[in-house]
Structures are given as C-alpha cells and as structure tokens.
Image (cartoon, rainbow, N blue to C red):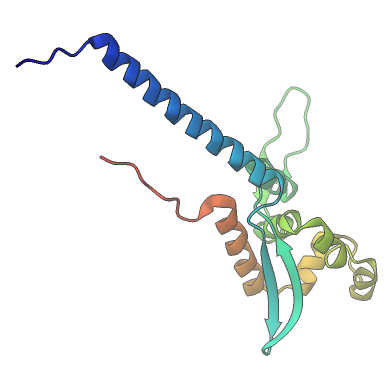
Length: 163
C-alpha cells in the first residue's frame, strides 16, 4: 500500500508550526522588554570591610545606550572646529566605571548613597560620580562592575543552537 501525501497538507502543517514558533518568539520578546522596563534582575551589593557591612545598595542591568552615554561622559574630545568631526582623544576608564555604577544603581538607593548631600559635603566632593570614587576601593568597583556586566547580559548566554 502506498500512502499519498498531499503537498498542500504538508505545507499547511509547516505554516502552523511557523506560526506557533512566531507566537513563542513574540511572547519571549515582550517578556524581555517588560523585564527591562521594570528593573528585573537587580542585585543587592554589600560592601564589607573587616567582615562588617559598611554600605548596601542595589544595581540593575543597563542598556547599550546607557553604557554608551557613560563612555561619552568619560571621554575627552578634540576641540570643535567648523566642518571637522570631533575625535575622541582618551577615555578615563576609572571615570567610565564610576558612571556605569551610578547609572546602574536603583534610583531610591542612589538618593541614599551617591546623591547624599550630607555625605558629599563631609567628603568635600562636588558630584555623585566623585562620591563613588571617594567611597569605593578599586577592587570593590571592579566587583560591582562584574555584577552589573553579568546582569546586563555580558555573562555567558545559553546556547541551544544545534549544528
């Protein structure tokens, strides 16, 4: 006995499968967008010295645009000349990392820590990013940056692709 497979039936099955996958993809995209909007994936950071928690704040993932904005703020450029594009001269990596930490800190925690006017006056710093440099040690900043990178998607992605 020979079974006849109608090519139109097979095509309809393929279309249905594509539509199901497309709906799953769309739902996944919508979920990712919602998570990004509501600061999903934030983490609590504890700065300990001599085994004692001295500072606690939460950081959230940052977007590519936010990261680029931090980079621009930490970069010195050539002076503007009419008809010529400005060129980046150098980027202060320590300042860049401080801007990343400031940007990633949740608003309510930022107000208590980096934007704290009383602490800024006590340390004689003029802005919030200077406050980060004044408070955190280099290794502490590096650790915080590692956490921000991880929750911002710079860690390992799951690779489920088949060859």
